[in-house]
Image (cartoon, rainbow, N blue to C red):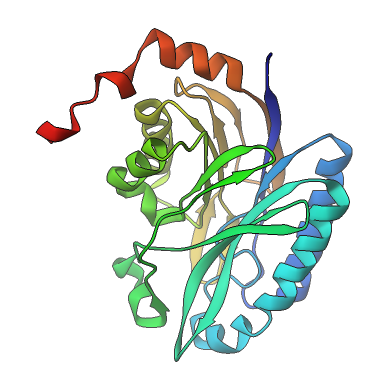
Length: 259
């Protein structure tokens, strides 16, 4: 029996530190996507606040309400929704991706790899555990942005049975080709689907190129956004994924004892 899921990435220009406008954009996007039959929606990294470093601790106080709102939308639309927000933690915060499924929290992932070039480690605490979770759309593994540069994490998620890798991101110019290449590499080497949502436009002092992507297990682009705000959708066909894994049995041929 064939199985497929309609997935989407939500791309928009995050208003730095402005929770209300960001939430309203997400509400409208999810309503549109639900009407189009979308079952999985991925939002950008820090979608509610952006990296408003000077206000992070204050802004993190709104995260509980934002997660509750997403849970309600998830239940109303029968949808899995994933996106990251600042989670309060002592005198810093975590960059945490929440997985909401038909109104229920299936898990949360705290970003492990903090981007020291942008001094994320000064304002954020690092997570220390990976996440693969069962949802109504399949087994979902979670990355956040800079995690893309660490293939060992993606392999762990794949070995743990991830079928879809979701990637909330805020990946700026001029490294757009790294974004494209790394996303496709993670899909190809792990033979799974990747749904990646980037932000776009100028946010604070940084210019973001968008280019949200949905990629199949062969590394082929199913959908790709441009520079402007917008939503992309694609059908994830798990029957074809299984066939591809049988054709090139990378997981069977692995020799982890030699690595």
